[in-house]
Image 1 (cartoon, rainbow, N blue to C red):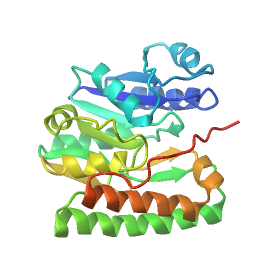
Image 2 (cartoon, helix red, strand yellow; image 1 turned 60 degrees about the vertical axis):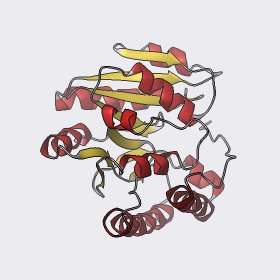
Image 3 (tube, rainbow, N blue to C red; image 1 turned 45 degrees about the horizontal axis):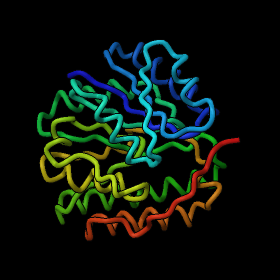
Image 4 (cartoon, rainbow, N blue to C red; image 1 turned 90 degrees about the vertical axis):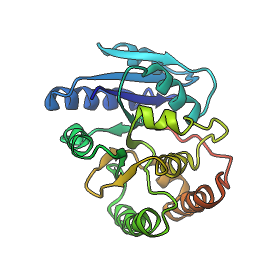
Length: 247
């Protein structure tokens, strides 16, 4: 299976370079041939310039700002690839990530999406402990929704891989969703056509700046509200969001 990374980026000049370095290092380490697509999403800083400085990275410009708009533009640009790895431009891909992706999809033909949690590498230890407890609850919700209620699954935005054909089969991205709930929308709709698997050890390193800025409990409450809203009502409850960037 051929794989493409899709990486939305809005004003990420401070972190996009580290992200791309980690992606290219993991591609080289794993031996998995992969294309890297950065979606420069209406950036006003050097994000596009930095991304274009990396050999082998393709940059797509999406002038309509918004995370889902950027993911959709990257998806359109990834035509010809079987698997789409959706990560964010403030993430760092850990060693072994691609190996896990290929093992999971090769062993289960019915699998259409794989996801896992974040490791917030720049957060205080007590906040990381709170997040670990939150992910424990997330795993229980995953089991309940996927295997008992059969109303969906769990997907972490910025750390999920899906089959391109499956996403096309369920209609692709809903651009009316700007930010909150986009990952749950993926989980719910893809679960109708195949397996959407959550692995607690399929981890992605990322910046905890949004959690630190807005507060762990406030952010967790907002994400939880929108998770249930999208799962059971089809649309997020929260439409507004704030851009948080590293200085």
